[in-house]
Image (cartoon, rainbow, N blue to C red; front, top):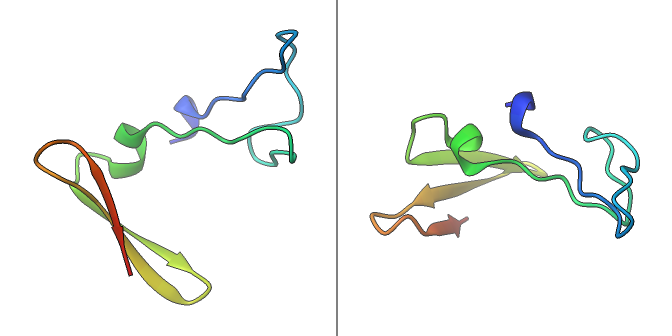
Length: 65
């Protein structure tokens, strides 16, 4: 998964920070192919609650609790 994490560049094209610790001015980007890894659904544990992120037949994303 780490191979496709990208840093968001500032307007001048310079990179800021690292992908593991994005600052308030940048966003971590993960490709959905890396997140799903040949699956159609992943579970996300957020503060002890499990969420399901699914790929639909139309390749849309649905997040449910």
